[in-house]
Image (cartoon, rainbow, N blue to C red; front, side):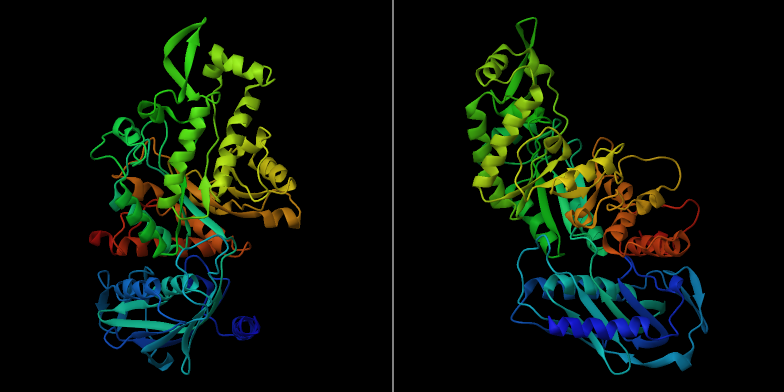
Length: 540
């Protein structure tokens, strides 16, 4: 701790105790670091001579892979233009005249020092702190963990500026950085439309470029069940759109978990119940409650039948398999938007309620179901996240439960109540990216702050972050990247950077630069600010 404190003090002095910084609009980093200073002095970088020297406690395959992966991103020049002594930096969309008198040396060997032994799985509250110092004497990156080192490599990739053909520079730099929130997620729905593995990987790349750290995988829903279970193979055989092509096998899920892990991203899987389960019932007879009309059974079904003990046995067996494929400490259990109509029409369920002294209160019946599922998950030694309805309906949830606030009209009041009750929370209410409108909408996402709900300091601490959500009604593999990005990067900075980072005049140029950088890296991200262009449009 003394070492970290001394590093912080040194960088605080460098950031705030010196003058001659670049203008704020020229610090084109996204998300914006907590403390940053870039001088006009610069170091040249020769791709053929540039090396990262890793100093770590033992071998770390994750970090070595990250170093190799980022080496391909440091020296992109597909967009470079050169005109005699005037250099056009197409990433910055401006003309830069390099002052040779500001050249103070060459950046060749960068020491990457990682303090703690390599960690194999990302987790909530992992350390992502890092520092960077580049000048005439020192070229060093420091991180507590391999996760912080991966974040530092992303920042380094943005610091290296392409200023012409085979010409790269790095400004004299001092950065100390860490995230504001521990949970910074992107949710993707792969049930309403199937999203191929390649596009999920591209989404993870985009997340890493913007320092997100949780991929919330809403993998199944009413429309389809693409998760391939070895314990219950009929679920995908009968519940997927196509049981041969529109599925996620054990091997493919492992691919995604590993791909995310290498980028410091957790995979939080969601199996939402008792509602949103129509596709489940196709492969598991007796799971769903049958609907009745005037006492007669119909050929339609509602949520999972909470009166049948066999259904809880099924869920326990399914979740025992799920946790072997998804190592994260949390499961997202859903619990939202439960329609009580079928339950209310079913005489067997009504009789069950009577036997349990649940009198015409279907929220209490839902509570009974959810409580059983929570006990199952607790028995599997997992923590859980639930949508806000579980809290609203009075379910007895564990102290470490995370409540996911999503309803937009009253999210601040909801968040106040959740945190007042002492529960941790994440927020998505103002970050539903599937809602689109004509025009520029990302400033609205940027303006939303998860802690802007009138809570006390202690309540604010219980808000551990949030996530941008992309529901799949109108999204599939053809447009998921363009629809999500670059709009989601507004959420990324709000969750990473300081709370006071709000000025649109300062933010917009950096947003545009990050948009173009993502295009340059091969992602088909859509325009976000009306008319304009990136020099690398043609390269996509």
